[in-house]
Structures are given as C-alpha cells and as structure tokens.
Length: 361
Image 1 (tube, helix red, strand yellow):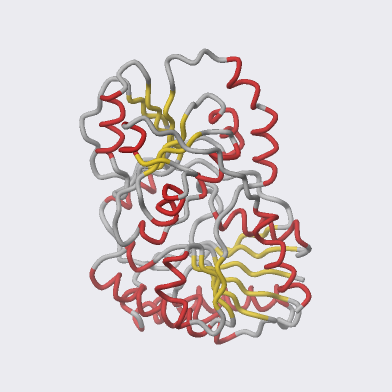
Image 2 (cartoon, rainbow, N blue to C red):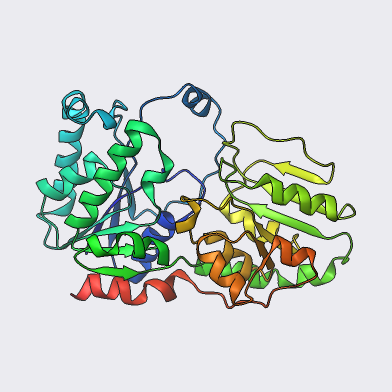
C-alpha cells in the first residue's frame, strides 16, 4: 500500500504531526510515502525574503528512504483563484502526472491531505485513490488575514466536505468542523516512539543534577501566538532560576527580556531528548485566541516523555489537562501548585487503529 501525503509543512522543518504521521504510516505497513511539499497559501510579504535568505528552522529528523519528496515551485497567488490556476497550470499538471504515476491507478494508494489548497482539490478531483483522508491538524484560516483568510476558509470547508473521512487533532476542531465531514474521527497528537525511548535512557541525568538553580524550558517556534508576558513574569518571579527558549523565531519583535531568559536557535529533533534532560519544567506559553483554541501541542507529549512537569497557558487541549491536574497554569504555579505526571502516548498507540482501517478496509 502506498501513501500520498500533501503536507502543510516542508520535510526540512521542525518535526511535528505530519512528519510523525508519515513515519508511523511506514511502521504500520505502508511500503512508501510520496510527501508533497506545501505550496504558498497567501500572497508574498516583505519578510518572506528574510526567511528565504536566512533559514531559522532545524531539520526534523533523518528522512527514511521510503519517503519521496515532491516539490512544486508555484507562483504564490493562490488567493487569486483562477489566476493561480492559469499561471501555475504546467507545474500543477506535472505534479498530477507524478502523483498519478506513483499511485499506479489508485487502488492501492491512500491520499492524506494535511493542508487544504487548490492543489489538494485538483488531486482529489483529478485522480483516483483507495480512500481520501483530510488530517485536520490546525484551524488553517486563522493563520491568515484578508483575502488569504477568505480563500483558505473556502478551501478548508470544501476539502472537509469532499474527503471520505476527516481526522481532527483536537476536540475544538472536531466541534467546529466535524458536522461538515462525511466521517469525523478525533485523533489527538502523541510522542514519537524512538523519542520516548531516548528520553527514558537519559532519565538518570536529571537525577544527577543539582536541584538549584532550576531550568524552565520551551522548545518550539516563536511567533505571534507566543505569550511573552507569561514567560517574563515567570522569570521575574524566579530570579535565581533560568528560562531557556529554544526554537526558530518568526516574531516581528521581542520585548525586553530579564537577564535570566536565554534565547537559543532551533536544534535537530535528535538533540531534543538530551536538551529536555537539562530542563526541570516544560513550558507551553501560547496566547489564548481563536488559533490556539484548536491546538493540541506535540511538545506536551514530548515533555511528558522526558519526565518534565508542564506549565502552560489555558488554551486548546491544554485547558483540559490543567483542569485534570496533568499540567498547571502559570498562575497556579505561582501559587505553589505542581502537576501530576501524565502518561506518555506514542504515535504507534494513536495510529494503530487508524492505519489498520486504511490498510485493511
């Protein structure tokens, strides 16, 4: 069985749900994956040039040889609809031919859409597959503004309605869009099996370290949804401890930070177990808004696998974990509360039934 995965992120980016989805598919019995790199969903902006010239990402992890990459160099005018179709007609046509050749008629190929796009629609309509699944990992329209947001909202709804089945990565996503889907299934995030094993092998390192000063750590992207206010307050309230922020920085500006906050560039996913072993607490400081309302952060599962207590703002799925004591809010931590250790859930656990249904339906 083959898998075509139209990804929302490039392979060479911080490891997240799409990477683990493809990896778990191979572990579950798929013979190969054709990973289609994402096409731009909004009109170009000036800061795109800086992103192209100075990469702030780190690679996810080694690409298995069973994963093939397909990249389209599309002109970024998707919100203009028919204009996009016209100027990118040859590149899209070539991509459809490549996917058709890979899928061998579609009887033994599953299509998974990780991001709604005009390309996704053309693949769904123009080619045949055993089944078509939309893995809804984010509330995609919330990432955009203006004409780009309206375009994404339309595409998002059409793909949800057209797919044979939709997986939703959070309760709020399923509540918001599930009624549009032919079949709706909740598939939360998880932790990589190999990552969990590496963390367990390093567990002794934390016990060997001195308990003072403590290290509060965050690993992940820094963007407009990052709640600097909570992090700065934590650093000020704990001046003898340090706060370490590790990841690519997409924020337009960063406020003045206390001296005990340290910013580091992104690291390879293979380096995370060692890094997390140097932390005492894992931070998830996201602003509470319409975008984060639908987020189940992979980093929560990785923090838990590394044996960290989690301090988080009350957004998305983390709100339920704070209510159940599996994490604490920044205010609760300030008041002296500490979370219970949550149980780690791996992608193999999460996807066992999902991929079984794909392979043997």
